[in-house]
Image 1 (cartoon, rainbow, N blue to C red):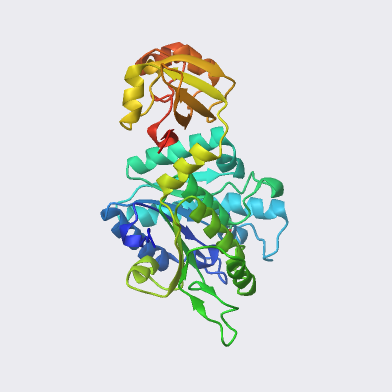
Image 2 (cartoon, helix red, strand yellow; image 1 turned 180 degrees about the horizontal axis):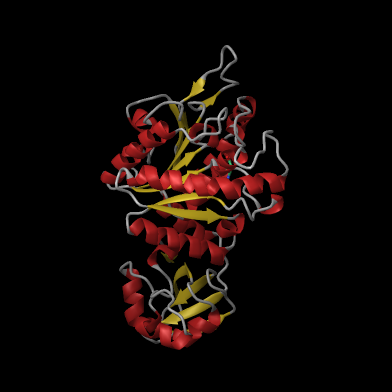
Length: 374
Ligand code: GLU
């Protein structure tokens, strides 16, 4: 295989933790020792140079008893109320655990639209990038209190995969109550563990359907769906047991788990998506200096743009033309057409004066740019 990733060589890792690992379901209490052992693993990965973001469930499980909900099946508004109470405790628990390893916790609550709608997607992506650049650890959950049924991720497996894709992570670690995918329910005799998946075939989805457990919202089916999202974004995903202390260390040391390995890297997958699947909604003509800068891998700054055409919003795909009107690149633009027209030809330092707010310095960031023929 051309591209096999391991946790220890990953550059940007999303770690997803289910409620039943973090919260003792009998008592409703936080499993603090386990959380501390996981934080030590995360600190190790960060010392090795990786960016880490956490997707943590547990808000509903932590808040339920505090509000006196005894039953596990609650009405939607009851679980939302439980989440409102539990999220405070959850964020605090992470802050404490990460601080004991000299890390900074940053709470990020997302709704489905933050990853599906392009403008909001770009905002969430930039905020998380800014946190990672400062060495903070984003602790992400669904904004359960405001997200209602039709606009929910529903399970954090999907949320974690969307986050991994959004921040171009190369690895998604899903800690679960099972150590991976089996050919049938792990309790059945003859069930075989699958160590490596390189393509989500119907045989794989079939196995996931049979081996689902009832614990948590997401069984194996939602995990395999998450793996498909991650792989399409060029990220590898691993399902491993979180039923042990130092669960990430254990995977690195060879504990049994299931790896889903994609064919391409996140950067390649993202660029393929920009180049291939989007219809440009506008055209930016650039001068020779900007053409040169782009071909050497730089971002497009407003200063190099000579004309702006089309009807595009922030986050849409646009084509970039050189002075001979040839398309030389495509990218996702950080301003809408009116704003882009106003700042075209001007220095980035003037953006705030022209638009009245401090936007991004780049009209198209190099991560959001694909040169023609690459
Ligand atoms: N967002 C929910 C919580 O924090 C969990 C959803 C899930 O476990 O998939 O309680």
